[in-house]
Amino acid sequence: MKLTIPDAFGRASPARAPRHGAVRFILRLWRKSSIAGLAVYVLALGALLGLASADWATSGGYPFGGVQVGSWTAWPRAGAANADPYTRAVNARRGEIPLAVGEGLLLTAAVDDSGQALDATCTYRIGGATPPARAWTVTVAGRGPREPGRAPLREGFTSTEVLRAADGRFAIMLAPDVQPGNWLPSPRASGPVRLALRLYDTPVAASVGALDRNSVPAITRLGCAP
Amino acid sequence: MRPVSLRFVYATLIGLVLAGIVHVAAVLAIPALSETDAVSRARTSENLDHPQSIYTVATGDDPSPAEAWLPIPDPAVAVGVCAYNLADGPMRVSARTGALSLSLAAHGRRGAFYAVTDQAAVRGALDLVILTRAQYDEALADDDENDPSRDVRIVAPDTRGFVVVRVIASLPSQRPAANAAVQAVSCTTDTPADDTATGKDASGKGTGR
Image 1 (cartoon, rainbow over the protein chains, first blue to last red):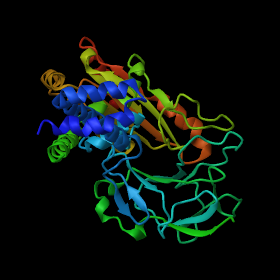
Image 2 (tube, rainbow over the protein chains, first blue to last red):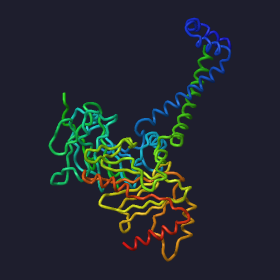
Image 3 (tube, helix red, strand yellow):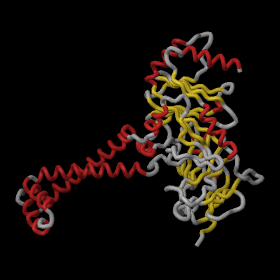
Image 4 (tube, rainbow over the protein chains, first blue to last red):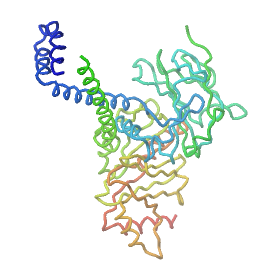
């Protein structure tokens, strides 16, 4: 049984060993004490895989806790004291101060109503109703730094300044070119776009499950520049 | 050949289990070890008696300054933080309500534990006192029965944390006022000696209005 180990590596080592002294050293170490080699392998695998996966899970957005409402995702527990450990870790790494349940609710959207990713070259109509709230803002929250040459025209609309139709509904046009009405310029020439809808002082923060597709603004793709 | 590969498979399985343990431990440890989290970054404002602006909304041609460390700030909301260290005494946050909607939220290491908006203000004033359980019991014992304190008392889960002040500028013309409203909030540490004095002062002001 013991003999099989040097046998297996004895066959493999002549091919590899002449290249690196370190490899030859490790192989010799392995042949001498396979238990120690296995222990090093186990520890390295555990540490590398564990740390890499923890970094991956907490480096982007919140991995869990989102509630899908239409094309929007609500994050009701992002700022709560009983948030899950991943959300807390993401907040800690980014220095984020999330909205508390009594303050408001954050909803984000990265896709339109047909499920396609939001793109800066396309024109979208964001319109309809919003859940009850004292104030809300719709903002573009694209990742990455702003382009230096691009003048910051407008980053979002608040519930007070948005132009509304006679029935109180509104339509915001997210487009790269000037549009009549509520024009929200695309944040960059090309690339993905994210939208954030923040509801301030809203009763729905405590009952996100009651929200449905018709109570949040619809995101409709109207066309794309070629 | 077979024993080697079997041993190797076992080692890989143990390695994966170990990776899972390391993953969970790392995720749980990140909030405690992080030096870029909001509690650590807000600590520089501990000695101020007004909120430290961490996001001032752009006014006119002035863009938002670079001091902002919020990753995705709302461009219409001015944000300030007051850090507290309850070892120095209870923290008193006083805000006067104005035309703009204002909200206060108290955060500890684990997240927000209390939030209130200006709709809860009594006669235009919003007074929060954040204290530890021991300081709360002391304040209750010191209360004058004939003149009960009108402060909102909140027991904090840890001694360190911060209070976030958010003021919404609904219109671009309200942005300078929103920045000013954040700075107008006062965050002071109640030292044990003048605790009752400031309490009386605040309630006297309240009745006078």
